[in-house]
Image 1: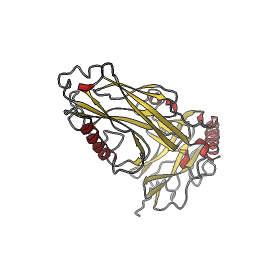
Image 2: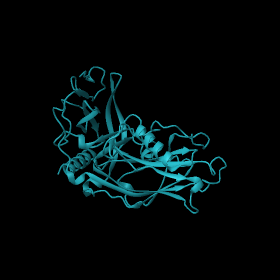
Image 3: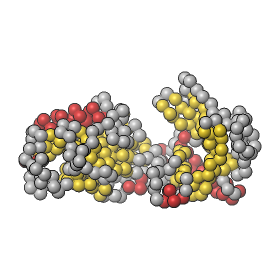
Image 4: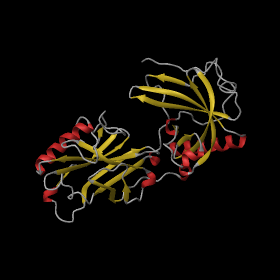
Length: 349
């Protein structure tokens, strides 16, 4: 395996790591690994009885009325695990009066979820001209298999290149009209621990024939986290970065919550949710037994500390990173170290 080391020696500013200290090392084999995460903090999410609300103009459009069918499928993705509902077809000419929703009765379960998991829910729709349920269901099943990748005997499958957090490789609606015979993503949303208890959610980027809301009538649940992991710690931290062989210290607004440190450029970026954090560090990947102040052999900057991390960049490559951070004051350093070590103890207990 080809490996590289980013050495911040030479051009590093005052207070940077000493010569020979690597900030990033690639290793081809997992010769070391983080301590195992306690099963008590791994999440479990159950989702069932998904209901999609349909656009009230579904039967009012001349291009749709009396001559087409729609197929629907809901895909949920969390990490590399993917679950999908069975396809449901709606024959517009035979649509009973008053039917305004599409219902998926399946029970879907995700287990061993990380502390900071996000479950992405995507709704795909296919439009057909021929109003036959058999042809609609068969074609939808084929398109869904192509979208999700190679079929497996289980509902949960590994995501292939056709399914991503973006367009998922599917065509898009043009001027509000769906292409005939193609599976198109018509809305998506995200589920996490904060979503627990929600009954009705709004879809992002909804497209016709969806109304834009989705219901989970059987509540989904997650395991509870220790109180020490739920508590937020916020403040400024300065991070050492190497770009193009040159090192510098960059100040960020940092938030520790649920075992993850998220970094924003400014406090307002977090509060206004401007595109998410610019960087993050998952403490479940930390190899330190205890996080302590950095020694002068590692860094001469005041109130600095380091976190050793293992990050998988590909299934066969693990990158070992030394994350160097510095607090503004001695009291803030003490607060950060206390919260970080308390979190490590909780997730490893």
